[in-house]
Length: 188
Image (cartoon, rainbow, N blue to C red; front, side):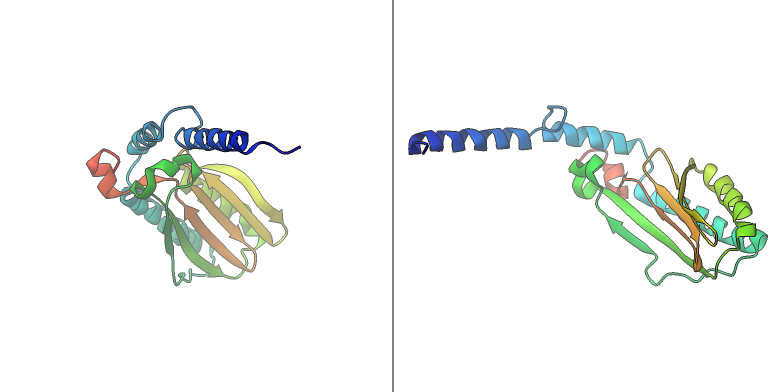
């Protein structure tokens, strides 16, 4: 059964109107600008990305230094590109260029951390990251000679610590406003 042309055009028009309305609203029925303001306000309660950058880099340095000094692992070999940045993900997608997520790699410590030292190394890392609001989320991998755990904080940051062929340490921040946006105090 064919739908008459004028009926089809009316349905297409209705469909387009629904799409426009859905696209202009967030999941709570508010407008995009309202959602953008809410997201910006939430992020303004956090340190800006440069402040968190400094804190996390100091934390990673402390972990690396103490793992070498106290656990006896090999000195860290830095990554060629230790930092990467991207826009915020789905939770804060309306803030656009006002927000940023960063990934920091600590490079690697050549060689495997022996199973006999893993528990002490994990305890050391957990102690340091706990001072920065991170909690152990759990093991990603936990088998002889191959361990990886993840820690997270209330701002969506995730720290990975593991050992297999090498020992590795990295962190991905949650979403934070840029320093400029934080100082400006309002969305673009």
